Image 1 (cartoon, protein in one colour):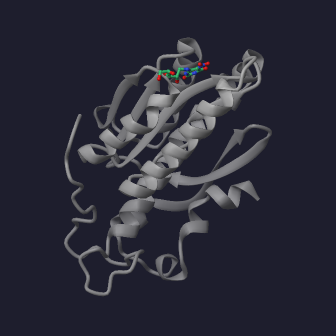
Image 2 (cartoon, helix red, strand yellow):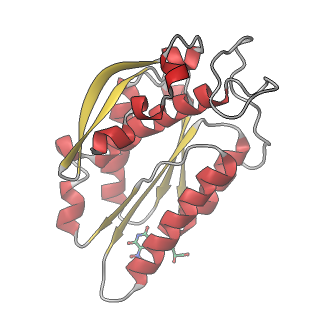
Image 3 (cartoon, protein in one colour):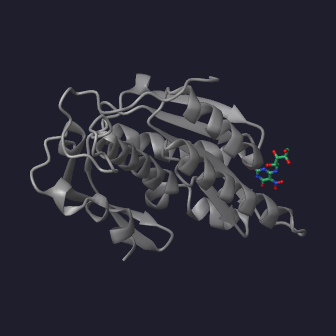
Length: 221
Ligand code: INI
């Protein structure tokens, strides 16, 4: 079931599937890429990210784990053909700062999707819950408010062992975050490709002049 949630086909309405000529839509084909997420597998279509710009925001806490996750993200971006020069990286103090930094980057107009990367490990107090929940809500809000896809790149774990199990090897969650970012960036381009039409209500079908991404007000970064 999880694969349906993440798969591009689940987002594509019948009009998009039937003969859309949007270049962004053409970049999303049906061959699935299977990735492990927790104990569940998730499938992605083959994604052509050669024209996608990705922002990675890294919390400084748990530097080693963050480095492993970012390694996983970059592997996925390479697999999706995202050029190295299309990837920007910034650091923030901790997970709590990720939502605001995401907002600055989203409004800068420099990226098509953002991957905030943070690791939170449960301690003796309620600190973990407070930061995890507010950061998660903040990240979701930024995506909804700006229209720039924000991936959920927070690893919240009960202990160090759980983090390691999810940040190295074939279960590196950074892999699926990278794929999800390209998937959502392409989805956004497809969705907005009809923005200039008078009848635009959401997902466009045709990109008549090739300018599928409307401008975003630029501030910051
Ligand atoms: N930030 C993290 O990214 N991970 C943590 O595990 C963590 N812990 O455990 O406290 C953490 N705290 C810092 C927080 O995110 C802010 O940077 C800090 O409170 C300043 O606003």
